[in-house]
Length: 169
Image (cartoon, rainbow, N blue to C red; front, side, top):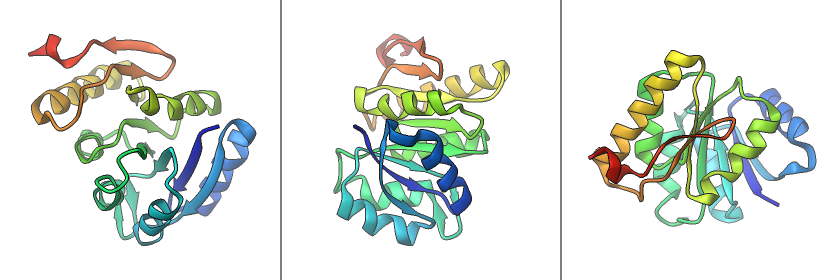
């Protein structure tokens, strides 16, 4: 079972995610800020951190920056209401292995949390135009940064959108 820490500044949203996902995952911790999340992730060493991009004292990028180096086995999946390009680019550059919007279904979210562990990068932007734009942004970021092994890029629903980065150079 996938062990997850939920990081979102809205307690009601965290409760909703926990309730919707039920027994499909094990929620081992919850935090509402960067300050709460960082020591919790270090202590609990979850498989996945499902984190909001915008938090009162920083955001997803700050959480990833504080934890990723010392906990390389932890995979970060950004979950946000925003599908703004700067938000996607920021957390992917920081090391998130996926970016999904809060319009995702419960079933898709369970599937999404397993993708980073399989070496995939998951995107779930809204709308067809948004899909094309965000996938292009993610590919460019991954190819230009060379900061991680380039994964397959998967759209929520399981469609493989792009091959490995060597095909884009």
